Length: 294
Image 1: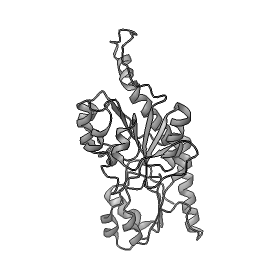
Image 2: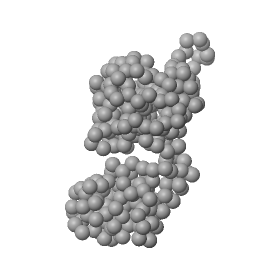
Image 3: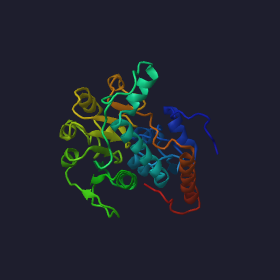
Image 4: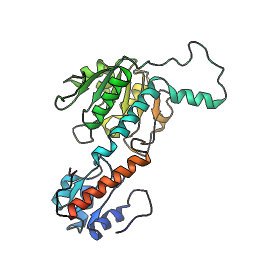
């Protein structure tokens, strides 16, 4: 077993060497196993990519299959932590917490007054969740039980949920009827730029957009334009299109909360992710079906 002593993404050479030299690889989200990488290697030694994380859009799964490589992920381990970050962003964006923290640190705060930094009160509002898988449902549960929010959602199919939640079949209608729109879909060609200019225009002027999915499910340029024009109330982002690059135009705005992909950044969660990835490897080499094959 070889343990890499760096946490930065694998280089182009390391990506190819990993497939050529090892029976199994445990990659992270920065390790871009593209179709070209698989093509360059030809017949790999590697038989399984046990991804450390639930999202696997950095791996061309079709190309991996064609090369005879199984891809697995770690879905259950990340659900609650990612839902918690969604709630963090909802509260920070709606209540202008990041803006307020900057004011408190600036030394220019003049003290409390009745109209200072008025934000959106979340309790009793309506949340729209795009993508009602494990994470989407965990967010919905927190919103419903924790904040008495009405839950609406857009999903490929209606879900059997044990609390009130309304399925909306049109994304634009959902965007126009909620106070907070939360993106919780996987990244794939069907969800690329799912939130675009038209969806942002459909949102109410006070509404907030939250993205804890993947950066490219939101058209970042369109979002910047909407935020600059104050067309929506604000946004909270944990992921970005060109991650780790965050456009200066986005960083300059005071009506967006920016987090550095903290979705699963808790020690216990990362340990659980690692153990789940190892369980996938153990199952494969024991001749069994890995529990989380994608």
